[in-house]
Length: 309
Image (cartoon, rainbow, N blue to C red):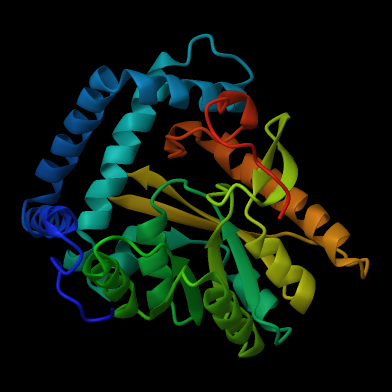
């Protein structure tokens, strides 16, 4: 279906494509300060209107802070941050490589150098945190060979547009479906010494590996740990924080691990290490964690049970 038009899958998906492209057209042209103010206003409005989402975010952040008391302002800031995230996603097309280099700072690139020096590629585990699409675009400009996976949106033309925004900056994007083909492409990337960057804390398929995460058991997607367990590739935690008005900071940290030779045991242990690292990165700025869905079984009595892979 690659190359199919935006309305090839129906009028509804086609209109979604048009809406996204229109939002991007506007975001790429309005002054940065105007767009920022509009996004903050939209986030505050979303906080007021989306009562159900507000409750979900409050529960998620209460796990981070250890209490549900006094987190209303943090929840409101999470809505504002999420709106700013979408604004930056829509206006990626306006940023040149030079713009991204000026906007984004990183004092830990030596972590990537060390990881890649082993010749096995590396796996960067991140989360739905901060401005990860902006981070992906920035990573593509650094000269480090990176591959990522993206869900195939409807219509397919929308996925291709999002993917192209990253490809022009040097980031290779692999469709998440078919899953076996995506996984094979990731193993090939590691064999070729490339970095693989993956969102790691939301188990969309609900058949991942069990971990303890912020004091409660839930499942993480198996992919990051599986890649590491089978290849011995170095594991790195990565996150991009907002550090000021249109200023961002990327932090990388190594995640040491040992392999036992038992794949299931190794996957479980590595997944738990990833969970601990994501806890660390989220705790630094909880309001920038864009987790607007349930992520623990105790919050999901209406959904199918999470199960074994």
